[in-house]
Image 1 (cartoon, helix red, strand yellow):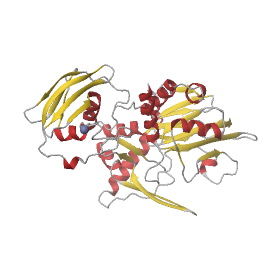
Image 2 (image 1 turned 45 degrees about the vertical axis):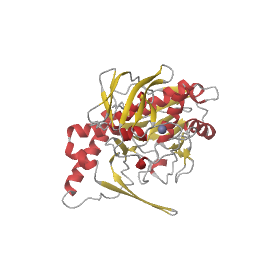
Image 3 (image 1 turned 30 degrees about the vertical axis):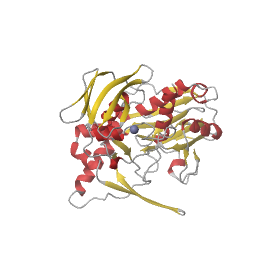
Image 4 (image 1 turned 180 degrees about the vertical axis):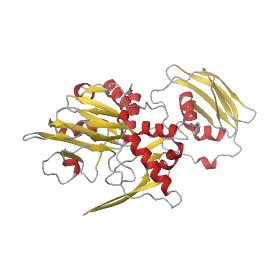
Length: 388
Ligand SMILES: [Zn+2]
């Protein structure tokens, strides 16, 4: 759906022999609607509560043989183009052409699982969109700056903020400019601090292979904010890979592997003293519309695949294709974060890791972070678009 409100010029409108309403758009595209769908979409104050858009009628009570008896184009530059539709039950509806066109887009049978996202690899990404704290997030921040930043974040899956006061208070303030923080078993916010005597791999100075966070959850956190507080070490760059780009590469080069990676579930047993998750999902998760949804990868947390004996060899072959592709340096970008820089990235799409580093005798590497659900990002974008 086009948040930016693509212009949909209406050329003409007609009722076809099949009883469907046909809108002919300025670019020649013809979109059709069944009368029941149009009647269901009526936004009038009899059908929907004005302030909240809550439904007031039950669409299963409409006459199954409902017809459109008359239709006329109306509306103006301010209200946007609309059509007035009269139905055989006596009801009249005013429907926005933009809404109808977006609905038709959403119902289209797209064969492109990446939709209109901008996929990237190491050679094509270019500079990550960057905004300063003051311009986009601070008290005097502007809505256009935040909108542009969110647009870039959605399109490529990652965006950067510069000059963030490097403490937890400002991490939380940045998150709240987008939406509500999603707490996890790591708390509301969390930190990664390297130590010379690590208990876990993440606290060590060793490299971390690119991975996604919390793959054992049914719905892994969608957005991760990562603010650099200290980076007084040699090495330790953050690494990122576009998981959707890797998936598309495999789809085009090895369809059999892609079919397995999008359907066979891996298990993610995660058992600690006060917590026990047994997540399961394919490595490449598709949504109900066939689009890429949640990528999962965690070589250290993964269990075994839920696959029968006949398909087992093919699964491990496909897993090998996935590992080889996702770890191919041609897909990876590296960013060496400096104190005051904050990265935001889509944990359903991007995989992240780090290169090795050396603490030395007095070095310090500390990052703080938090998670939000991805629909908080989409909600904020729509609200900002509406306010424009
Ligand atoms: Zn109505």
